[in-house]
Image (cartoon, rainbow, N blue to C red; front, top):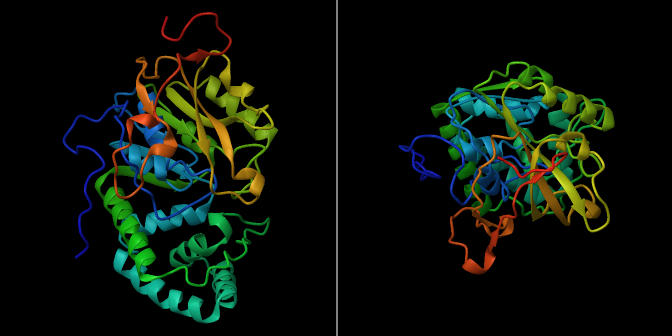
Length: 343
């Protein structure tokens, strides 16, 4: 019997945003741009009563969904393998015991044959995709990258760590799978392999949408290409969205500013925080950036609160950050206006 992991926050409290600080749960799947160390900060910035559906058209690793944990959600992703993995957990077709057994055996073969065995699994997955092989590749591919070529084949090279699946690491992954399955089976969440437009087309006034699209200029080869045309289309759709929303995007790094950000910011509340991305296909994508959260006015946390730098959060198990890591949020930046947010 797998243990019931402790809740991230009170299960009995009335669900609403903002959330107080919490140590985030890290999901079993990883991908470039993952928000594990940002999700608590994100949850502090938003205001929503939870009466409608949480809409998340770019699910990715699922880290925001699993940590914000709304009562009802419709989430989509263009990557069918992510949806298939979490569907299998939700339906009970994949269990923590199955994951443990699989990783123990394939981990033994990886230690014995190294990169050769990685390519065996990758070729098998590309011929006949299945959730367990996808998890294996996700945790042994170079730097946690998810990337597919135009044929829809996973093409990330090996991480060069044949000892990857020691017993401690397998236990950690199994615990992550356990938590994900508990959340998927205990909440009213619908997961669909679909285009982001299909998800947002369902929006109603009581809903709230969180969007984490591919970041132009940083990592856009996650499953389908994303560029200026896609960014412009998304901006037009958001301008007519009937519900509240928040969009994550990079603002700047040491060398440049993101020219795509201005598509989304006119009349919006923008809050920023420094962040370091550890997952990326190239070294230039693994460094400090200024992360932006673009929020529709009226759905931001109106209070100027003490917020934690994302890098100060401990991840599994929870820890208490020290006061030296506390920073105060600056007043809201509202682009295209001459008055402060909420006035």
